[in-house]
Image (cartoon, rainbow, N blue to C red; front, side, top):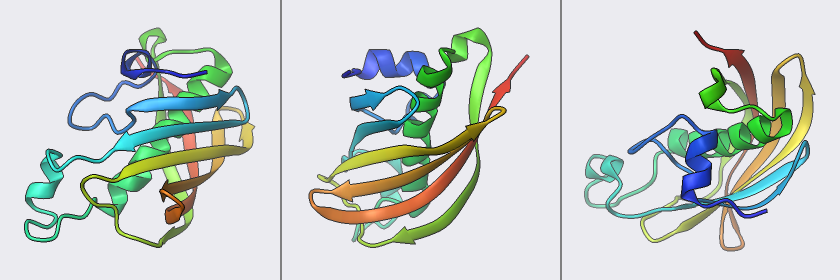
Length: 147
């Protein structure tokens, strides 16, 4: 199942400049997701990170992976932010950065469910550029009802 940016916006409460998933290419409900973030020099964080050698901040790579996890979580439990739910990033384990992500790169975001119990989800995540691993991590998200 492919999701374009309009469908993604239904499943993520984030908006510019913090919406970090541009397209979903594959999703298997309850199991896995493959999504993309197109990295552009126009990203606001490149003004300061770093002006003469622009690199996507590692924490934003983690956030992009977590947003992909959020889409998978929402799709799996058949809920939406419009229904009053949100997925919070509550933890990350075994985070490793292997290569910098720069303007012009297309960041492939992959997440596989490790386990889900009582609204807490753990995912095995990878972010790659081409065939090169940029980041890997286990990401923990929590589903919460908001007022």
